[in-house]
Length: 345
Image 1 (cartoon, rainbow, N blue to C red):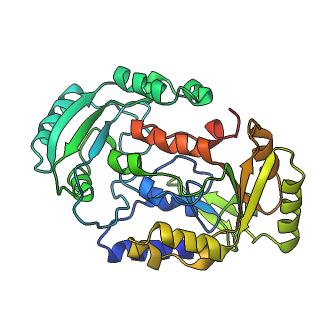
Image 2 (cartoon, rainbow, N blue to C red):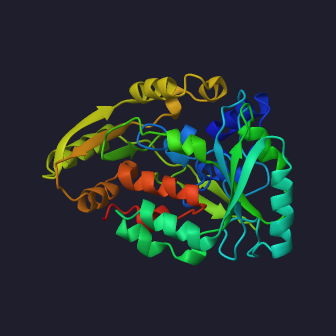
């Protein structure tokens, strides 16, 4: 059973001439699938687009099926893209646990250099990628402890020509042996969170797919997980109890409550130039959310863990950590958020 939100997104992308990555929308059916597949243009509010109580990351080249969810867009200015190569640790079915061979690497390099959209091609090996990763995340010891050099795929870094369309470039490389995924690094570099909140507490929507909201699912033979029982919306009593819990937390400096209409207005403002996405999303799809600012020097770990235990809470996001996880996608790394984003520094 798929959700109404998924159906509308599918229709909107189809009308835009786009293809749909089933694994990108699968969190609507299987919220415990935690691997990030991030398009930084679609990260909203607290750093994620939360629809129907589940995290939706739709974007260029997350690991998964061959078809990827990409929305038709006008020609772009020059940008940097990364073509990440398969390793034994690569997630998703595209690599099937096998590393790209030397002959495949050479053939891919020749192919990339021959593409009319590409101006320059540079190869980044695992050692170089690992050095850059450790410099980028020097502030996040837990993330550094989680990621080893074998987790980082080698890649080709492409600089596109003026007017090249990253979507069309992505399509031209679909199904090429040895490619783990493709990322638009230019879009990633431009992304900035639209909320300054340290912590966002998303409440449960009606018919939620999130287990914390009471949803249940089963795993099919092909590995897909389908909802067998939908979750319940946060009640007024639960909302009051969550507010009271936040009020009594000494780490909290201030907070605001955003109803669905406010979240939707912010969403529309964030994506005013994406008519298809806006047409596929309704006020009812947006979750209610508490945005929390912590006192200076306050530890976020206990706050996050306590709020996650509250009935009626679908998801608690510590924004800086989530941003780091999303940024890790620039290195071809897709991590489980419960290992790195627990709220502990």
